[in-house]
Figure 1 (cartoon, one colour):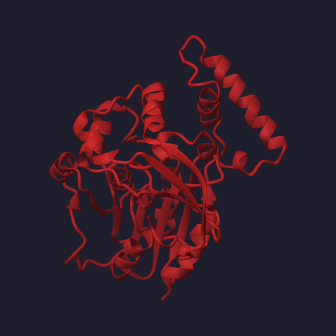
Figure 2 (cartoon, rainbow, N blue to C red):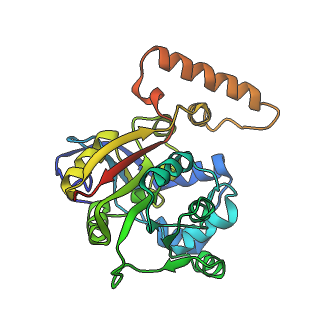
Amino acid sequence: MASNCSFCGASDYETVRRISRASLLTEYKSMYNLSFPPDVLESNFDFATLDIKKCRRCGTVYFDPMIAGDATYYRYLSRNVSWYYSAKRWEYPIVSEILTNENPKLFLEMGCGAGHFLRLARSRGYEGHGCEFNPQFIETLRKDGFHIITELSGNETRYDALFMFQVLEHLKDPYSFLASLLPNIRPGGVAVLSTPVRPSCAAVSANPFLQPPHHLWLPTVSAFRFLAERLGLVCETIMCDPPDSSQIVYAMRKWFRYAPYSNHFARYWTRAGNWVLKLATGMHCDWAKVGHTGMAVLRKPL
């Protein structure tokens, strides 16, 4: 387990819950119909229980043990979860405006995946480098004329902007990783970071993708400010996506012991999720204010 919170640096935490490997795998099967083959189980689920820790300073949640998914895990997801590499993200329209305002000559996207953002940026007249580790994506993007790097060591290119969408939560030490990237960002440049956050509708649903081996961290909005301060960056703004009743539906199905979901009953589940979200909003519940993602715009001082 991390001895310090990678976002705020504090070592003061509490254990809030313990979950078992068996219950985690049951949820993958019951809610997503995913049954991992032996090679994925052996290298990614080598634990009996997971302790969920919460940083007392910034509220970020992390896990013990901190097991990060390997290539076998993500290869399995890419082949069996149709929505995993979505071409549409809440962040993209907002970041398109950031591109317009910043007008970067060159940017870097860490974890560019299938290249959806790189293609969007190119369509708006901006060019960027991508960093990716999936051989299939690397080959395709390079054939399409994108400059893709596979490691950061030895890369002396300076960028006007850095984009990381849903990447930090997969890393064992987000702070150290970002610190290693700072020399590649020009003074005055921006770093745009997005992750799932808590409290949120997604955190209430607590689906298995918010836990190891998929996600290792679930920060709060305030954790971005601590992270910026530790890195010597200026936190210009933090924004979050709107509440999402589908996350509430997921939580309700779990509460009712993995109640089945079908197209026939979809509208009833949706109505129930909307009603619960409306009730929680009226009660001013913090988790009902955010759907899933927080995004921070940090700037490197001149």
